[in-house]
Image 1 (cartoon, one colour):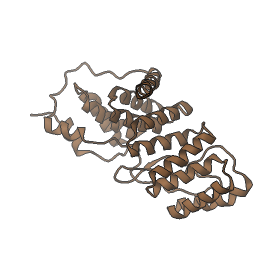
Image 2 (image 1 turned 30 degrees about the vertical axis):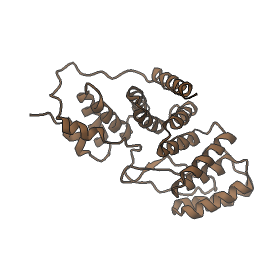
Image 3 (image 1 turned 180 degrees about the vertical axis):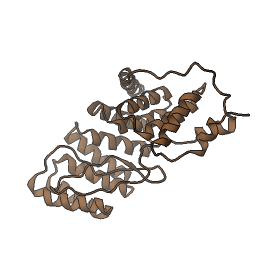
Image 4 (image 1 turned 90 degrees about the vertical axis):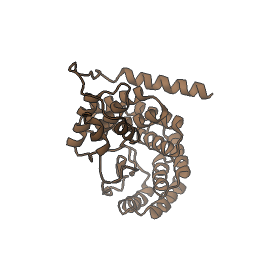
Length: 278
């Protein structure tokens, strides 16, 4: 079964590669000398940045009481912070007030309170996918990854077409170290919302850790095509090109400085690797 799953995942990523658009090509001008081995090793230890934002954005409750939309954001250290999930699905009337309370709790980052509210919503409407989704987000914020994954999985059972649920579930599996499940969920998220660039950035990070750097490059290129101002995609492309054998220094340099111009925090490790040896 394991080999079949890997084959299916490989096919999914390969199919995604065919829609990635035009390839980047290296300039024909001679490359500068490769950086020293020490700088290269420091770059290889760098993780991907999963979001272009340097700090979490504030979440504001909607006046209607509907869930507030939020893409995953990054803490100052670069770790992912899940936001409240919204999809174009109307809530039952009896849940509107609870949804307002939940939105306020999320805005104030009162995750214990948010968890209790979403537990009430689940009990009141056990067939509502968004209630389970946001309960999963609250559990994630409290560090309960297993409970978060279980609630997100229930949400996808109730409505398998909510792309953000698949993205969030994939991220949780990634954090738990289950790369195969993360790949499966994220490729489904891409299927449901192929124009969501952030999903492809997370998928690329998982593919890189899984040992598929070519797939990571494909997804990051596609993310840049979808959103040329997505700094995290440029930054991660720079890391990937520096890890390649042989290195693709000019492409790494191009994407790294694009990321910095777009507001991402500079990386001394990358800048050292981009500096030619004397």
